Amino acid sequence: MTLIEKLEILSAAAKYDVSCSSSGSRRANAGGGLGNAARAGVCHSWSDDGRCISLLKILFTNHCIHDCAYCANRVSNPIRRAAFTPDEVATLTMEFYRRNYIEGLFLSSGVIRNADYTMEQLVRVLEKLRMEHHFHGYIHVKAIPGASVELVRKAGLLADRLSVNIELPSEPSLRALCPDKKKEDILVPMGCINQGIAENRAERRKHKRVPSFAPAGQSTQLIVGASPENDQQILKLSEALYRRYRLKRVYYSAYMPVNADARLPDPEKKPDLLREHRLYQADWLVRLYGFDAEELLTGADAFLDREFDPKTAWALRNLHQFPVEVNKADYETLLRVPGIGFKSAGRILATRRFAAVRAEDLPALGVVVKRAQFFVTCQGRYAPGGGITESLIRQQLIPTLRRSAPAATGLLQPELFAV
Image (cartoon, rainbow, N blue to C red; front, side, top):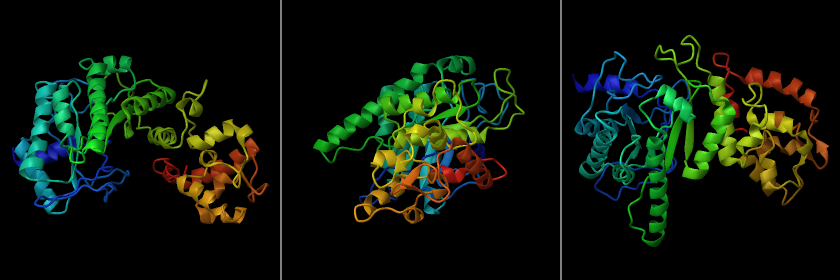
């Protein structure tokens, strides 16, 4: 099999992994090597569904000893199999980089022989790139569940980011859909990476020349819809992962039927992209805006609102906390207002040091007035059209949100960051 044929097979096999992050690391080229990793990231090209494609995203092999129900590469599937050698991956990365096709590498793998053998192959790729080819560009590597702590630590000293995919949100689902895997095989490498990052930071405070360990942190991926867990369970798990393992990101992937299996949902059912989108929005609030998972989904509300983004849905359930007076509220309170984000909250605080913020100032400060107008007052007055009657808000906001949604998917992409 030629190298190009392997590339076609193993790049296609990697497309189901959405946790292809490429930012958060600064790896400077001291001279004599090739490339740099910048903290701002290497993302400069995007696929039609919004995913980054600027990294060479491949599997080392799609051979796998496991038979996970949802996985296209499971051992029982009659698909074309291929495997790179460490030299081939290193050569591809260097040649693609020199041609300006990519600025980094995202490398994952099926499990061949056992977890340690597979992880050894990935570490050999890293050693060839860093030590033989003197490549200083961005590298994200998937740690293999069940691999030894020593191998994971070796990878952490060579890669910019490590990740271990959880895939399923609960242990019962893992047992049902991935009978060969154990929860401990996933959590032990996660804990090892977290400990390695913490120890490395402490050492670097004392000695600046200590090599970095996974400077861009670690991430993971959850498949949404392959198992029966609700949004509340998924968000609580993500919140626990952020707190316990200090993950940079949890990525959510709407289940895509690639196998016929009685344990899986109806194969004719389309991926629930709106649910995936709402989970990303809620995750953003938990990770950066100071919300708890229980605030966003409480009691009988097991799933996120499909009509409203999670912050607006939370505000509608907590109208007793509104309106917020923009000239008096603190930064944390402003961040909880729908339509106000980090930049706009900061601009409001900066502006009111010199003059009172008026309703007509809000658009210039970056506030999304079409939502915020219902939840804020300026000098005791609502913005034009504002008010906090729930029925009024629903009547006015829902048509606006529907108009802003792309017809093909129902996704409300503009809301992802303007929360």
